[in-house]
Length: 112
Image (cartoon, rainbow, N blue to C red; front, side, top):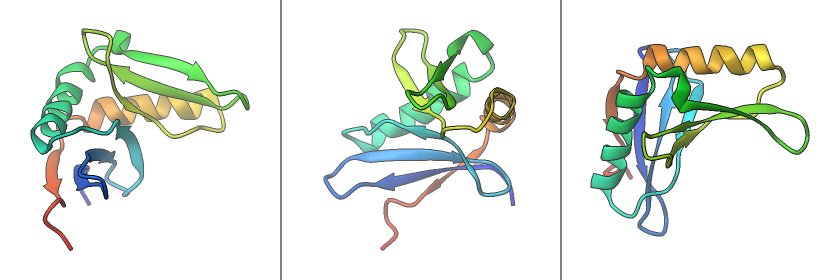
């Protein structure tokens, strides 16, 4: 299975996307967007910014779990990772986002 962005509509008219690796694992989840067009622009922003390691902010959750956020050039958060069990796992996640950022979009907003 190839990597893909899954674009989904939320229950309150919001839109969000997940970038999934070829194995189906979610490697990046977006914030909520008010319009489908804004969510698609968010995907384009991932594609544009994922190649720049400086755009990845490595963080630690309150429970000590490492995770990362991907930021656009203006500092806005585009997406966030899951919580990882180790720093090396988080770095693998960042590498996966970089590798898979150019994936196709699966528009699931019309799916029932």
